[in-house]
Image (tube, rainbow over all chains, first blue to last red; front, side, top):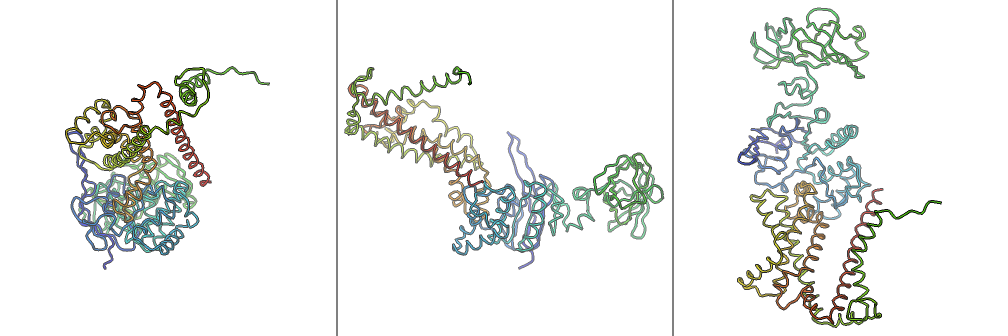
Length: 366
Length: 268
């Protein structure tokens, strides 16, 4: 066996809908190639309508690819119905069976597989123990809170020991505090059971918190695949840079190319950045992306961009400055409070210099 | 001391409605014990003879039997077929779905007399003899739309990903249907069955065309109205049916409420 749990090869999914005489076609997933490594917490991240849920349903077997093939543990799945696939799903709205109590819900998959009663009870007990609901087994789903229902759904799927567990925005309906707690717990459970998790979310913070590997999706295409640190530090396009965390985008032109560095002209001023691995040419138009927390503000000095403080927002740990540059673009700067004591606070309307370390800015080709 | 309150307009209205609804029924019950063949006041005296006559009347008992048989059989068949239709229109994207729905709901708007005549002609043509079976078949046709709509409303009310969840956990489609969909729909199935049964039980127009010699209760009752001396017996029968119906309704309501309160207790 290879180390690949799920492989998606050249998969395209087209939905066609008829409205009167006009029929519309929507490409939910386009020419996707993706391999999900075994035993990892893998996340499909993207805004709504980007095709992430469709991808999950293709793996589960609720949708069939228009073209291409899905492999699970190296087996082609096109002729395998959902109930025969070695995957289980935790649904967005939990989809617990309302007419069964918690224990019967969790035992459902085992009953179908005709696992003997004693063995079944042991496994159900273990699964409920894992999600800390052992004392709730006689309750009906309607008598549980949202968070508890979520755990039952998780136990019901995990008890079958699937090769891959699919989770479709399972924390979407929970309040913020519970969601944060469940994020850590989910990651913990994943490490404990060692099952491959494929997790769908539109929440970038959630994805960064839990995932070993993230695929950022937009319009049915994977924009970038990488671990959280790579995605945050070296986004390959503007969409990823913008979707994961907060980013500034500044348009400029390559002025001079040096050893591993480039000089960029922005609104008549020059800044230095690392040139990275791309093929740059002098005179090329590029977009610089810099995280707000990587920008330094000072009152004077050279080697930066000059600007004016347009607005200032105090948000507890940080202060956010919105600075208008010469080029009439604005950048957002985050300064940690209480750290930068020598510079102090900047007032609205004050002239400042905006600077960053060359390696903190990334160039994106237009 | 509070002032003596005049009854409000609302309570007068309520009383009037109750009287209008229940006075005739009460009269039926009173006259069923009255020792006279005419239904007029003053009452003549207490008797159980009508009840005695009722239970000795073979023809009538046979009509009750026919009605029960047709009612149970046709509502069972209608509930099953209606459920299948409901699953088809709610859960599947069928081509020609709206046409199917319209055709299935057609018996709702066709007058029963017309349906009865046309079925009479049809059954003659295909060689189905006039019998309780023929009437039952007709009752299946008129009951299906009701059963289908009741079950469909329940199916719309719960998310179809429960079936997906069952299949995701290894159940085949049929197994998911039996273990998840049908149990969740069971109150609707019961409601559909009861409604179809009551419709069949008191349906006269179609049955009168099709039953042949197997008179159902409504058909028998109408035939007896020609004989004045049998009127008290008909009244008595009506009183019995009314009492049974009310008892069933009260019991089912009591069961429903008992279920609700026990559910609420468990939640605490």
